[in-house]
Image (cartoon, rainbow, N blue to C red; front, side, top):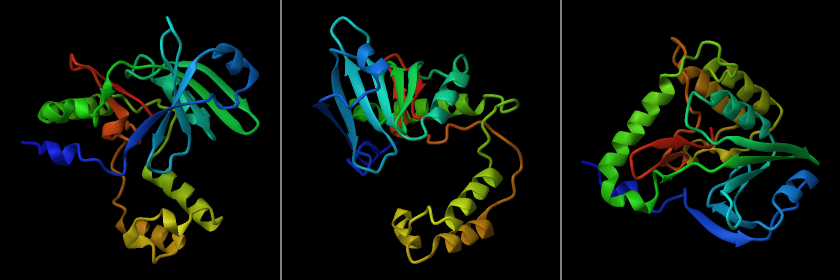
Length: 220
């Protein structure tokens, strides 16, 4: 039996929706979204991009992500069409060092939404089913490689270039330098025994659930 209070306790993954002025947009997006209402999805943790729900009377809602390096997410979402229920890419623009990714809205509420407090057992089963659906995708031919060996090369490169800061570490590792943490990871890392397709950030806020028990994936 799932402890509902534990599963839905307010924690570091809180999100607040605040109506706001539109961000400064590239011309193409500014024209497309003129007259829309912007609601910023503010998160209580450091996130690499800003997220807005964009609404307009008699129009379907869309979501806008603004931040660096969103091209990778765009490419993954395009590749996943027909493989997973994910948002459709409506428009992608790079302007003055920022990426702007306009996405369709998926049905449902995030799996950590208070709506599901009394149905936590069912949510856990749906979450497990959703993960199995992700893992069932054939990794052969997938153009995106996040195997451990690849991630370790990226981590080492970032550590050597001083791109990792100790405050980013879990409290248990903040007494260590980035290189020391990297060496510790090498000691603990199990051998790779095969490939499986993964979401990359599979957590309650990134899986949407509908009342009729369908699900979708965001922030892939």
